Image 1 (cartoon, helix red, strand yellow):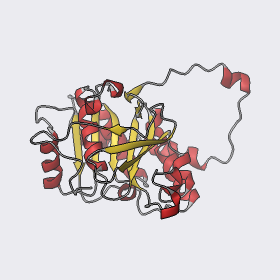
Image 2 (cartoon, rainbow, N blue to C red):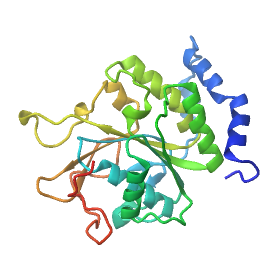
Image 3 (cartoon, rainbow, N blue to C red):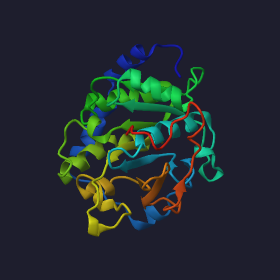
Image 4 (tube, rainbow, N blue to C red):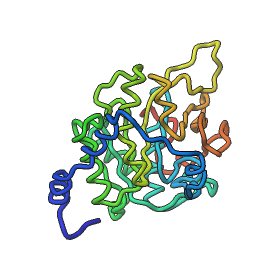
Length: 278
């Protein structure tokens, strides 16, 4: 964190040389110079690293989706806590984390509800690695919104951003419109280029009786371009009568899904998957 300036001073200085002006020019650029396969083939890229092994990469877009009432906010907040502390997610070695600064943008809960859930999950007031933004509006479909997020990421050295929810931060775009979805994700591409992971909480529809019980990526609300724009899609479904969520990787996760995510949420003061919270 930049301790020589306040965040307000840092943001005002950054806004004068807004990166979003350059990003807009890239989005509207009518022609792109192609590269040869030799050029692309000789480029060196680092091996994929993970903030949560097999679930959340160190950079890129992730959608964490479920139908309403499947505890995805609880899951996402606990994941944020584990990343901030550098401890195994759900207490399982297969979900090792890389300790990093976390920004959790909540646009649905009240601050009092966010506090209640954080305390119930065991957030520690001394843990300075989790920042929470809970306000009335954040529109990431505008230059101003993305520039604000860039300022926060750079000033506080954020490595992963949770956006709860996609619909709440996307400025009322029509999710079924492929061109609007592509433009929205192109606007946020600068975050990936800076080595930041962005986790969008989203919803999918309930399957009909003849579609089976396992969630499919086709169930996600909106255009299929939403799925195409992210590196990883994680879908949650709880078993009838159970207290555990299942992680169903529908895209690009090396974790073999359809196995229960059996975290210990039964201790006093901890949330149970069986609660009615969403």
